[in-house]
Length: 381
Image 1 (tube, rainbow, N blue to C red):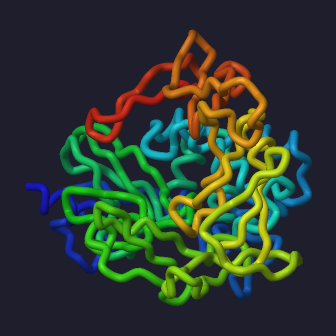
Image 2: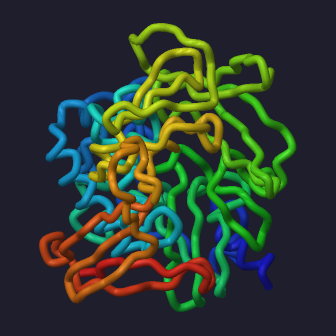
């Protein structure tokens, strides 16, 4: 039965036969489908007009926004994403806010501005004013339907239809909740019964055997054998590079967009007044953890984890971070709801949200990932 469900979710062409199409109403109107230009205005032949038909300007320069504009638009995008798609994975408000601020605040994240599909998706979300519009952002090739449940899987195994999207199905009668892994610079991988965001599609997402660069793809295996890499096309200079060091000849990192001087590649970061400075790719780069997490204890010197992740020093920890003379930080550990007020928690930092101000319904704690995770989200309007 599970195999039949996955085939249904993976349908990408009418040529697969009327019998399969009749089983599941997979696609709806093509007006909900975003074109390549709408997702990435830098695609050859695309320009400022990309996205006009769907009401989406996919060529916004986030680096023109002020810090306040970046946070305001991140709040809107993440509030609506969690309400309309559920807080599945990094759709959860706190996690989404950190990722959205990386995309929208070029002052805090100057060396890895979002590019390609990732830019297009964030550009789509901050402009979405309805759940239908959010769904069109998350499922760029059109809405999909579940053929059973509960389970979490990839929308397709062959990347032909919404290949970056991780879905949770609860039953035949409910549409899937979607997490588009390309928002995080990744894709969806896993076998037929499991979907995870990572650096490889298909079963490579949970059977990582090769580390290094494959074009712009950066592959890194974690201790559980999963590929937790990213597509470097999603940020910075859009290049994956290998950087030999004294201890690891297979060092890989996404090359930043940086005019700073060269440095010896290192797997560690230093902190200065809340700003993490590191050199994973042989060029000095920085990220303002204080601005992103709004906490004086937000920057933590030491090893990058995973080694290519220039953002990993940004976390609120109990040892006071980079301010050795300060009192211990009191980081959060879970989401919470209080009527219309939502508090999301990510990297130990709290991200507050007023659901009413976002145009959404009351906050509710929602269980995702087949009952294993509980996060807060506003309810749809």
